Length: 162
Image (cartoon, rainbow, N blue to C red; front, side, top):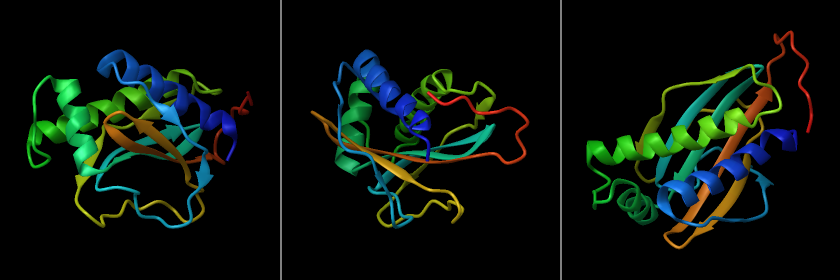
């Protein structure tokens, strides 16, 4: 996968978390993911379409997600709460929307977010789409950005590389 599709998500999570949560994010070494299960128990999921298609996942351990949501919402919430899922959805939406604005090609759209909470859940990603994981560390715990994108073969626009 072209690094030009990964860098916007790294920049975006750092911007969103520092601005909205006053939470610095340390970025680890990106790597291609071998298995298809999200890394942690809570996943905020956004689809992308247009010149590139695929899925973006922000994956959190449950305790980390609860701490991040507390910072975001200004109050404690259980992972079982509907408001908790809305908060995680809004975070993945902000990170993806900000990243979309930084994309090398502007002809992309993002879907409404979905949130899955539970140990061992799966997110279906086509087998021909590579997944790059970007480990992130915060004072609240670890977060994983999982970027599964490919250039749309039907796209008439050339992708400009950064």
